[in-house]
Length: 113
Length: 112
Image (cartoon, rainbow over all chains, first blue to last red; front, side, top):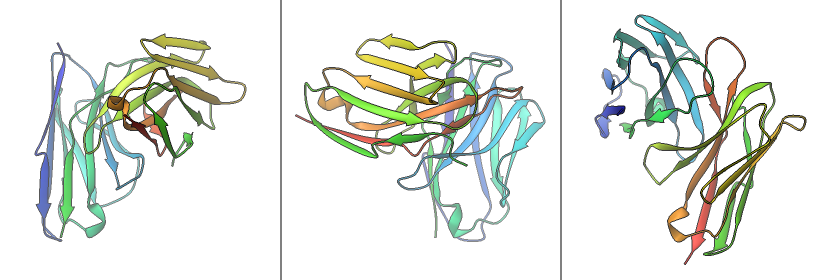
């Protein structure tokens, strides 16, 4: 069966420090991968998505970046965190093609102090 | 930008009652999906309805879709305290690359 792993669960980082969040998927190949962010009490904002290795589409210009070095690995990074980067980050995957539901990871709660 | 807009923003009902949540969207879609989020947790996919479908059932869930009005509703029948969570609708656009766009969510509280 397919599973998605996202870590760490919580993270407290100082302003200006780097960030690396990792997401891996098991049990499927060539998934579409997504990074979402959820601010407190708000809906989800799509940050990046990828339909294949090395293919990254950015939805929101910001100081974050994403990479997909392997088929089932999706990484969210920042060189210097801002206070406004605090939030709940969720990774998700779905099978390529239409009319499939998304499977979300358990999320990383990032607090920038 | 937000595509889906849920209504109401918050809903409080007694256990055993039905809960109806509504969602409106703006553009053409491939499908519309409903998700549930328990406090501080990841999202769980509940149900997907395709643009050519009008109604779908899954257990105690019933979802309808009216593409002419660009709206959907999620009905949870015989609610339980364990249904307390935030519920989100999300739309998947027509086009080459699938990407879900979420509304802000509805907070459902079911009182025991």
